[in-house]
Length: 416
Length: 161
View 1 (tube, chains in turn blue, brown):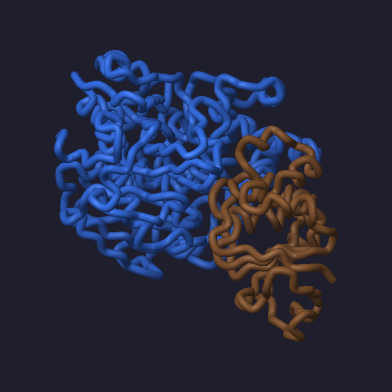
View 2 (cartoon, each protein chain N blue to C red):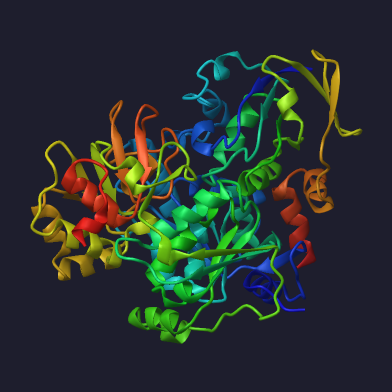
């Protein structure tokens, strides 16, 4: 019987013939942790009291509070650094960038099994890896043993047909899909993306979509690896890491979902749930106080490029704060070389160091009571950006940039 | 026996414990901030043995293990929900927070007195004189719980290697 990508990768890593519903113990290729979840994982690892078998595959990142705004967090970050040095694990200090961006730039390969103590670890499905978020204790076990248990998920085959119209981006596609499925519409499942639109997407676009798989409850969001993946890795000097990952033709899916992207329009998620999706025309004119362009969802070069295209020669509306955060040091340098950073600064925006920025509500851009933010991030939960009395709309970088210029939620199509 | 604290669908981890408290590592301190924005009185008034009762997709969002840790430290007996988000459910089992799946939580109202018989897999609603079945856990998860959580289970996994 044919296999889905999830079944193939989990079979290979568990050296067994695994299908949906099976529980397997599998060898893990890459492990990632961030400063919010790592301290707890390290304490659990100490509790386990065993040798650390997978230190060479373990990567620590300080991105959630980077640089630290409080001494308690500084102490946590020091604790992580000292532990990483002690066991010989990789440590990425503040300024390197977001955990998921760097894992994709440097470490994760197509066909890998990766886990991370962060729910958006599912991002790596954009290059054909099986990756999923876990809690600190699960990740501690992965670091100690180099393996953990997995239930092989059933897969939904998501067929994206057609081509994206002007002003509609990968972000709009995934928001629309989550709006259709609901925030628990794919709980425990893997989303596997196929179709003309998926095949034509750049890896950066695929990463945006895979990143948000968890927002409809999915365990993973996976694309096949192909020539676009090879090119992406080659640009990073990692062509040797390429490997073809494909689903079998006769693989079995629990559900098949079809979406013709040609008929899509720009969309947003309204407060306070990601599946509260509306077409741009329904919310156009809503005043905004802050615009945030960045995060593991939309802080990559192509995201900054489209935002800069809209902001070039224009000004951010008076009374609006525009915050731009490149996803990694590499993205930051590329944006500098291409003159994008100058565009943001000249338009009246702020550019902060690579990291999660205001998305988690710990520092850098906490909203005031009654304020409205439009953001390219992946979550708009109540209180997400540090204030339960504020509202967050989710959108593509183009919609966010257009809104920064207008001072209200705006349709990006008139700028493109 | 304990009272039900009733919540709706899609209770996310930011609502259970806000991101700004991730700096706290003592469960008892975390417990003081549970549901702070949604139901500020909860953390002050919850008693040992009470139940958090909710609808679908409880614990969606972040992978933060602080969420089940904080709930456990409030002293609640268990969470009872129609369904759970994947990462939260796994975290709860790993750290030993009882998470019961029951499709009939709509029948439970805030303040109802509940009691659970784990052997029989039944929730008794003393206020209403009703009983509701609990969906059983898969055997593999029972094995983890019987071993006393994932840390102990992992030690046995290591022997298997």
